[in-house]
Length: 378
Image 1: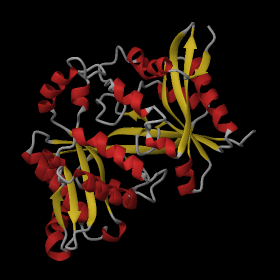
Image 2 (image 1 turned 90 degrees about the vertical axis):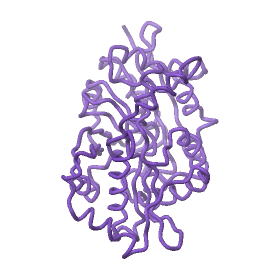
Image 3 (image 1 turned 45 degrees about the horizontal axis):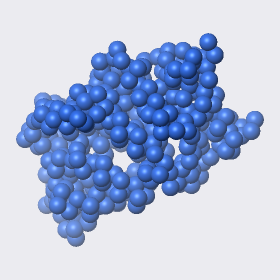
C-alpha cells in the first residue's frame, strides 16, 4: 500500500505523533514511555523557547489511514549563527521496519529543508544537542537512562540505505563505585590539591537558591561547551524552562559546584537520579494513580546519569574535573545510587574520553548523529 506523509496540523494529530511509539515499541521491554503531557508541551511551539530561534515542521506517515512513522524537520538559526553553517536537522524519527515508510519520511524532511536553503541534513536531534539526540547504534541490551532514547536496531540500516552517513558518534561511559581501584592515582592527587593549592572547593547545589544556582550552572555550561561540535548555547528563556523541568528530579547530593575563593563558580556537575526507572512503570501518565507509583518507585532508583560536567576553560588546568570526579565516588558511597553512566561524550573529545578511561570506565552505549549533504535547490 502507498504511504502518505502529511504535516501535523491539529492537537489530535500532535497527540498521534507523540503516541506513535507506544505501538512501535509495544513488544520491547527496554523502551521507556515518556510522559505524554511533557512531550505535548515540548512540541508546542508556543511553549518551548527553542522556537524563539528555530522553526520546524512535524510529519506523520500514514498507510491505510493509520500512522506508521513520524519525523520532524527543523532549522535552528542560533546553531547556524554560532557555527557559521547552513544546516537543517531532523528528529523524532520513528517508523515501522519498512524502507518505503522511512524513505517517504526522509524525502519529505529533506524537501522541507531544501526549500529553506539548507546545505545538509543532520540528525536525529530532538531538537538540538541540548535535548535528546543521536540514534542508538550500540548498547541495545541496556535500558535507556533519563533524557535518552532507546531505538529499534533496524533504524540505522534504514537511515543508511536512504543515504545518510555518520557525522559524529556519542559515547556513554559506565562507572561504578566498585571500580574505584581502577581509577588512575593522579585523579585522587589532583582532587586532594584542589583546595589547598588553588583555593577551589567542591560544594553542592542549594535548592533554596535554585534559580540562581541554575544560572551559575548554565554560565559554566555555555562556557565549557562552546567549542564543541554542534553545541548551541542556551538562551535565557531556555534556562528558565530547564530550571522548571529539572527541579523535580534534582537531588542535591548529585548537583555539584566548584567555587573559587571569590565565590565564582568555575566548574560544575549536574548528575540526575535515573528517573527512567520510575517512568517505565507509568505508561506515560502521572494521573490518576501514576504519581503514587512514582513516589514508591523513586526510592528504588539505584543508578544516575551525569547530565553535564564541565569546567570553564581558564580553570581546566587546576584539577577541578578531578575534584568533581572524586565527589561522585563519595556520593556513590553515601547514597542508594552506586554508579551509573556519563552523559554522552563526543568521539572527537579526546580529553574527556581519556579522562573516563583513566577513571576506570568503559563505553557501554554509542549514539550516532548522521548527515547528508546536498546542494540547495539541486
